[in-house]
Image (cartoon, one colour):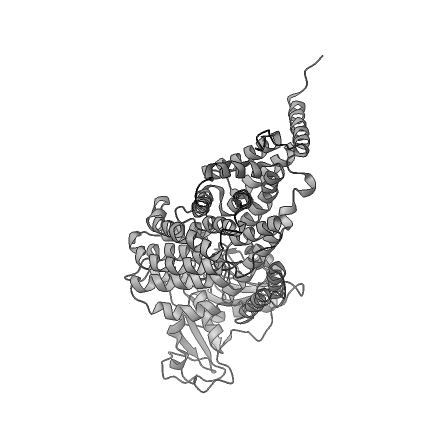
Amino acid sequence: MSERPPRCRIFQILNLCRLHASNDRTNLRLSGRGKPQVETPQILSFVIIAGAIVTFASGRFRYDLVSLVALLIAIAVGIVPIKSAFSGFTSDVVVIIASALIVSAAVARSGLLEAALTPRLSRLKSLPLEVPALAGATALLSIITKNVGALTILMPTAIKLGRSEGSSASALLMPMSFMSLLGGLVTLVGTSTNIIVSQVRQDTLGKPFGMFDFAPVGLGLTALGFIVVSFGWRLLPRNRQGREKLEESTAGAAYATEAIVPDELPKELRTVGALDLAKDRVELVAIVRKNGRRVKGRGRSLLVPGEILVLEGDDEALASLFDRLPLRQARSEKEIEKDKPYEEVRSIEAVIQPGSPLVGTTAQTLRLQDEFGVKLLAISRRNERITQRPRAVTLRAGDVLILQAGEHAFPDFFRTLSLLPLAERAVKLGNSRQRYGPIAILFTAILLIAFNVVPVVAGFFGAAVVIVMIGALPMREAYAALEPEVLILIGALTPISEAVQHTGGTALIAAGLSHMLVGLSPLLVLGALLVMAMACSPFLHNAPTVLVLGPIGVLVARQLHLNPDPFLMAVATGAGCDFLTPIGHQCNTLVMGPGGYRFGDYWRLGLPLSILVITVGVPLIAFVWPLSN
């Protein structure tokens, strides 16, 4: 009889594992001494979790890919039923995190907080003032938005400030990252760990944590952490050169654009000097009179309605100026034509290639908007200042243009005129922004949640949908804000963590821990769980740490006849406070390149903060959430 092919043997083994898992899951029993007996499903779940941890720690593979492979193996061996294998992707946790990311992105795009903070922060001229100001601002923003979003909002300001004399980006960015982690502990949506631990409480105790249940512990740790980083930044290197991202390689280029003086100007804006262009880091290159004559504008020059101002600055500075002043952009009266009503209008940078039909001609001659539906917003030319209106400039190969059009118009336009789009980067010039809408929607959602009018998931999902609906964040940017790696990581590992519970693995670990910790004071048991979560976070990532240790904490508390809530708080706090590595939380990873940090730099400031969280956080949790039932 011929031997079965190897492929058939693999399926035989998988089917055998599934059979054992199915039988053992329904026949879990206790040994004669009352301890859970190790069964095949438990062993399989432990092996999968252990394999994921080892693979995470190796750093050779992406977190999301590892989690998906782990889920596939769990399905194949039968510890995760197919009907519940994808429940993690539709869980409240994933919806809340995705919604919070969209809301944070809309708040960042509005520029309101940045506009309010940047002028004040730019006046600070020394690190002893800059570090507390930026770290404190990051912590405050992390309380109302997701911590990653808060850090993203203020990082560009910190990097620019760090390049000035007497400052240092490497001294600024790590304190900001650490304070974003601490600030995120204050509210339910400040960090993913709080959201997940709330869901664990819902699943195990029948009721989730509220929006501000985390505030007493989070505020206390944030205040003390602020004191530590305000002085401890001196432990960090200050002479590192951060890596510039690919999309930032063209950021900061000086563009020339034109602004039209409107027919009606406020009385206080009658002269060039009253515009205070330096506030936005913009220069006035020339004024084009109505007769076409160009003159050099001075502070006392009167602003005449209908005249053209030729301005120079990077695209972010120019966008900020148009947001602040009632000047109109070039040809703003003519709408962009779109193929479909819902098509998004985008601003894109492109360079003119040799041989392009644009070389030697002007945008005005080619009638770009009339013929191609593309609007020229600004021009940048290397080593030369442009003093003419951009539409009247004779174009050359190598000129960089900022163009605006419906997104479907760009491919044919670039191909026809031999233009090369630059590395994908968010170009702010020409993009309309809603200043107050996202903030108003966010605070409305927080109030509705705080007064129990709507549940957290409904409140933030509704806020995200309304923000996109009113155009405060284009759908394309909403998708870009979602951080799919984190969402997939949580969605894939949630069924596996549930499998550990259903197979009795959680009870087995909890019984072992209870046996080891019996006789210790409840405060030491609480501290041990917090330290365990803090130690697991760099290797297992903060989200899976809560998914695995949260249910274990509940069972340990029950077996020791203690209140489970402080144990859940300890898990959330420990998992959310990885100050020792750049890999346990995406905030730490985010600042590694721009700050020029090495792996070993994090413990310099992170070790004092970790000791603070352990020594102060444990008694603070026990005080706010009594250990006894």
